Image (tube, rainbow, N blue to C red; front, side, top):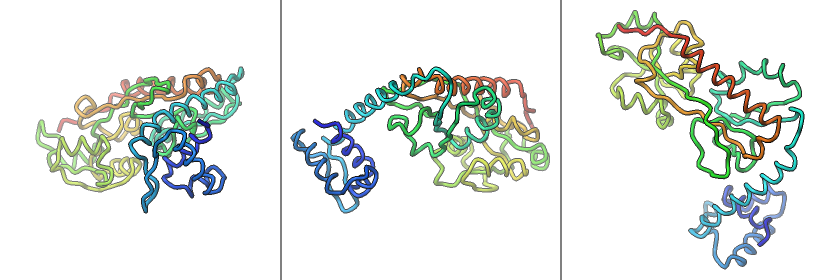
Length: 302
């Protein structure tokens, strides 16, 4: 079996298109077709079914995909090991993470990082759904969901708490009955297409009848709406701690917490530049957790 055939197989499996695969690998469509046929012949099985909407894996194809991704991971690991043994923290490190973590956690700390490591260029990729450490799209990924790939090095970095917040002004103008902090108050809510988010799920379960003051499609809009005293919202505590006007209405222990994970190829962490970024992330996350604990926002009980 030729590794290059597996490379063609993986790209077709991901793009579901011979045309896109040909473009991505800079070859002709006939070459892609020939490579797939050669692989199917060597394995004595059919790997794809061609429908009008694209190429889809057969059951055998799904089985081959698991092994092909493991082979890909090992080949990339070999390349990384050969090129990543730098002695001085210098060069480019690509970090994939969520837009919120990049904006509110990482970027504010970058002046300190740049002063400490002037030779490292950090690239932030915030389209986390399309960035893969396995495919070598990024050196590191900071995620709120623990990956399942066993070929990756996974390190728990901390816990991100979320609570319900509003401004003192909004709470004063919309008093609630004792022991019912949401009564008579409205929420800044997520659009239905974001109902899978933990904050949206929590609200739908904890208070499904609470009316919306504003429906948004971004956390930035929710923060702006809450600070404008339009209503309450479920916000990450590390973000809320940055706004003195925000008051905790329901504490994190009654809302939810999410674990924060750092993901990389194990061999890449031997690179001093990648390790420098990983250690710095651990440092600022620990500082953020301490700041949130010490912030002690007023807990509004009326």
